[in-house]
Length: 77
Image (cartoon, rainbow, N blue to C red):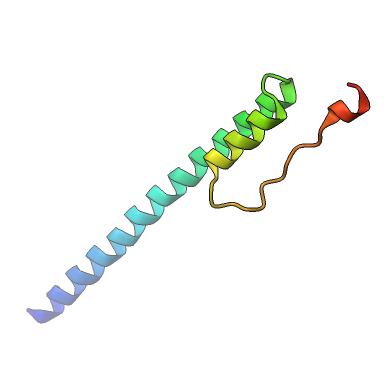
């Protein structure tokens, strides 16, 4: 009888790991999609550099390596 208890316990643990990892991957995918949209909007000129940086930090607050976009206004563009 105890053999089945261990198998069930191991099965529940494995199932929990799969469910947890699936949810985590979905969050990362949504964050990457949001960053892609933000990059596209900045590239099209729909938002300013300041808006871009602020929104990027809002989307990804734990990433301290956020690259700031080049300021093309220095060249008179």
